Amino acid sequence: MSNQEPGFATLAVHAGAQPDPATGARITPIYQTASYVFDDVDHAASLFGLQAFGNIYTRITNPTQAVLEERIAALEGGTAALATASGHAAQLLIMHAMMMPGDEFVASKKLYGGSINQFGHSFKSFGWNVLWAEGLEPADFDAAVTDKTKAIFIESLANPGGLVMDINGIAEVARKHKIPLIVDNTMASPYLCRPIEHGADIVVHSLTKFLGGHGNSMGGVIVDGGTFDWSRDGKYPILSEPRPEYNGIVLHETFGNFAFAIACRVLGLRDLGPAISPFNAFQILTGIETLPLRMQRHSDNALEVAKYLDAHEKVEWVSYAGLDNDPYHSLQQQYMPKGAGAVFTFGLKGGYEAGVAVVSNVEIFSHLANIGDTRSLIIHPASTTHKQLDAEQQAAAGAGPDVVRLSIGIEDVADIIGDLEQALAQIS
Ligand SMILES: *Cc1c(COP(=O)(O)O)cnc(C)c1O
Image (cartoon, rainbow, N blue to C red):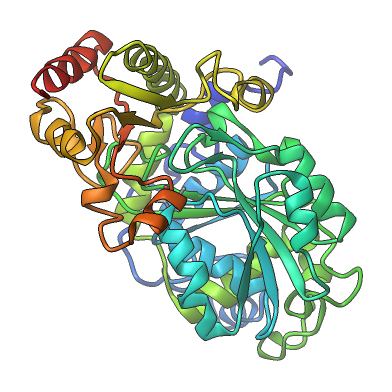
């Protein structure tokens, strides 16, 4: 055996997994069980008291889920991970472990629409307030931080595509205010970008998208970077003060550089309950084995399609950081040089009518609200996801009447371009 650290593609296939000790099964089994037999009464007591690691009940841990968590922690370069039922569940558990009622966090305005709803409306019921940074520059985040701010939240490659955030610069702002930087890395995946290497403290994903990669299973994950000091100034009492339900254990003191992942599991997952199903964990694990191959193909295909559209007479503009003339191209070269991902938007000269026509005319593309499938996907936000907003709100969300969003799949790029060609040709 060589002493060399395994590379990314090797980790994507092997990290966390070994042949099943009971049967020799090479593939990680689907441990389809709700609970686990204790060795004896003392063993049970030590599990419940967090004195030993082990399985009690699948709401909190499951062996299929554990392999998934170890693999993603390895791919992101974190100390530990926690898989959840969906990306939104992961975001909920992150905030549940660090926020108290009345606390605030600062978020980018350029986020997945579902996150804007979750932060702006549902989180209010918990007493957690979001402050939106005015722009995308580090200084905009700095200006929004107050003494109640407990975290900064951004997407590495931001929805609806084409925007690359200055992770290092925003991490510096977080460090200055002694608060963690949370990065949603869903659109880039760890193959294109590893935010912890650029100063992120916590990484979150919707596994439903590129990590699972086949549009067949919901899931989410929290990765603990192990970089943040939760005990420094008493700002994070959930981690730095004794937990009454666990015999007075102080989570940060006991679990050190993976205490955040533990807190999300033994408090958030235990009490709020959004556990991933073992079947979905299995499907996503299988998907991750080909992540490097798929992500490269997604990005290479998307660049070709973006170039094609950029030169098309019926297209007004294309927003894709992989294009040389894109305003985010230099940030893309810095943070994700292997590619700019699968998802981007473009504008049609024919406006709303043309947008409706293109999504109706395509044959290979699927007209639906998702990203990160092997299949090419298309949506016209103004007539679907953003239909309820007025014109001004649509424009602010990057979902004006002319905007079409694509998630480019891994099919033959000539067929993808051919499909767009015939769909555009039908617009008068
Ligand atoms: C889809 C998505 C989410 C939410 O994840 P779900 O698995 O749908 O709950 C969060 N962030 C981004 C960037 C997404 O694309």
